[in-house]
Image (cartoon, rainbow over all chains, first blue to last red; front, side):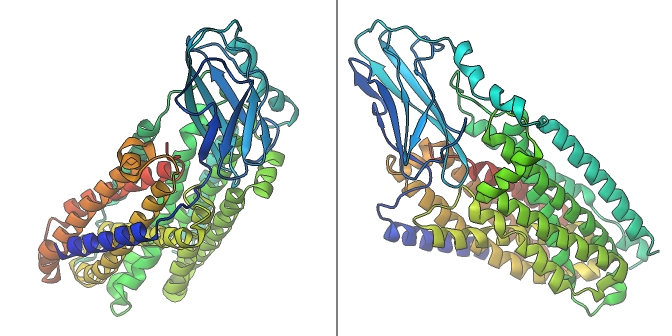
Length: 181
Length: 338
């Protein structure tokens, strides 16, 4: 049990050190604030959704997206593509329709190249007159266009190629190893 | 000690390690699964599930390579006749695991490129673009290069035997572990220097601990003389690794949770997907400490006296828990605190 005791002692020391050193440090690719705020109630929708992160977001074609889903769970209420300005990613919002909970989903590329996704919610208290775009009209624009022109192949072909490479490598390596005997 | 007994290995223990690491990934993915929002572009399933599985296979190949290159150092060089049949097998397996390491690093590179633009196909140009613009891509290239050097050394050692210095093989294998943690999501920028060093120590200790245990138990369990010699040495290494893994793991997990501006620590620990994974890994660590203590104080005296023990069972259990921890770790490095 001494190893366990030592482990626990180290754990306690590390925990104390961490608490002692803790300050208002900034984190890696995290959402800091948003307009509208998470879990806020609004009586009319803003014209733009703004998500503020603690670090710059990498801009690029089809790298960042924001979608807004209405109370029925299918309507798309964002009015266009997401734009990046430093730490802030924003997307225009259509005039909102029925009152209820709206979910804002995002997928952004953080400064180190790691895609981060998440969501916030807000509640519309007074019904508006807007109408959503259908999910089917919005979704295909995100990846399809890029798929055509770069002459790439689907991921599984790469994986199959790697498996063949590995098999050949193992075969050759065993031949090399076997020739010693 | 007949020569047939020295060749009785337990490869199923290594298989158990790899299988449990994949189980760890799947459990981790289930824990962190979020309900997708309609219309938000998501990577295909082959990328979402395939990437963490390839990453954990990369880790397992690294662990096996590191463990096997540490084995000559654990056995020592004073019983060459007894050790040579075991080490000859170890060198061949290390050659294959280093090859798997190279290939999984390249596949991970392709999958991470695919993750960047959901729905788009992957061309060679887009992979090079990924390497050029994203740090994690460069890190994987370095991993593949160092793993290839490790492979080259192991081919040489298969042909030339132990005249290829074991220290060199172990150093190259450990060095190849370093590039990935530097660029991971797990390092955070304000605390970057501390968390980076801490993460490097965490990864190297975990690999040496798991790989060392695997190599000793799989290859030496049937050979009482070598085991009586190597296990006490490994036990010292394992104690250091346990302490380092615990300290660095707590530090990194706590930093990542504490720096979240919106959620207090305790709430973040039980309420976020990242926190739940941290708790799962802590549970693994406690289990490993208990099993390690059991092997160190109950089994090792008997092993040192060349008596037979239930080492294979207990160590197999320990390896399975280590595999789970590696699986959780892969999902953890990709999970946001939310």
